[in-house]
Image 1: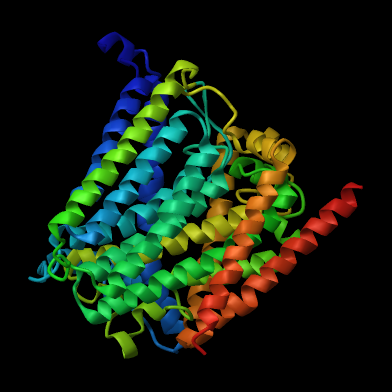
Image 2 (image 1 turned 45 degrees about the vertical axis):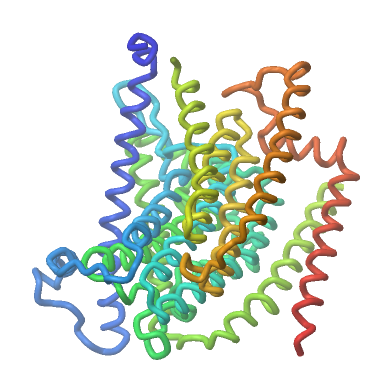
Length: 353
Length: 167
């Protein structure tokens, strides 16, 4: 048995492990600094200074916040279901991180004479995988809310779950229209088609808008942050949580925001393609590894713009009422997405003829 | 023992174990969570056979949508172990008899299937990939496919009608 196990491609395993650890730590650091950025953006919009005590410009603020959350007392309510109570935040964190596996973060790089792709796995069903993981995200909220054994938590959890399920539908429909154009579910193929060409957003402006709105709703961000509406539900589904378990819930939200921004950039805005530059020509000039670095940075720049958009909207638009939220989804977005889908299908058929 | 065989046994134990836990656990919420575990194990089996599309659709539809609705209903009705009604002795006996009948049918069906069955292709085989599956669905099996979509449509209309009855 030993011999057969060793026949495994160890280099492959190490390469993937390094990649996974790298991507997870980058997502965590970005999520940390998103909390800082959110407070700074809020401060600018409200004409304040924002955090400026910890380090220069308050740059150490996220570390201080994390330390505070770790130091706090861990409270597990007496009546709650212990195992599920702990499982809730774990699931929220896990599903937030899992999506990053299929995203292409840059072109190939060459390490010790080996071609290494900057994508953890390039599966045949990339977009569907993202979709599956998103639909799992509900469980973190629901289990946490139920295990807290608190009426407010349960109500918030049910609200959150029905919101996430409802907004998955227009999201899926807007993606179907995109898939009709690309003809592939592979993320690498979708990015490859946009390289040095028109971005998908030009073909699918309506689809992108619908996807953007749904992404806001899926991340439970304002104006759709009904699951944590303080004025109605105290603190939402994580009311009974304290210490780092609460931190995980809050953190998962920021990671979700980061990942959904990356997905929007990948699907609609050309992924790691450098805009206004002929990538193939530039690659000849500066070599593969530098090119991959530039492309990765470009993807992060696009992502940062979307993250800023998330924050901009949060501090601009007030929260919806719950019936308005559901009306928007079922009566506006779904018909609109269906219309977009039929229009795209008709145009694709017409052009093929 | 290669990695694939090891994974197969691991997933099988996981699937059967969590399926048993669905029946055994007293709390309905736990039952649902174990059922989700079962679905994940079955999806793992699909992926082991390289049927990626089936595997992920199983997760999206069953684990991601239907089980959430189950959770919804159970949470809203607040079913707990204390409120569970005591079942009477005859009812239990009837349950055992009907379960045994089902087992008999399943064993009989599997026994005949074994004779002209063939080994499942592990790891290789591209019949479950999304392109091939789509081609088969829209050429050889287009009529059943369309009929099932009409079935879904009528189910949706029926749900709306039932939901509207209140007002």
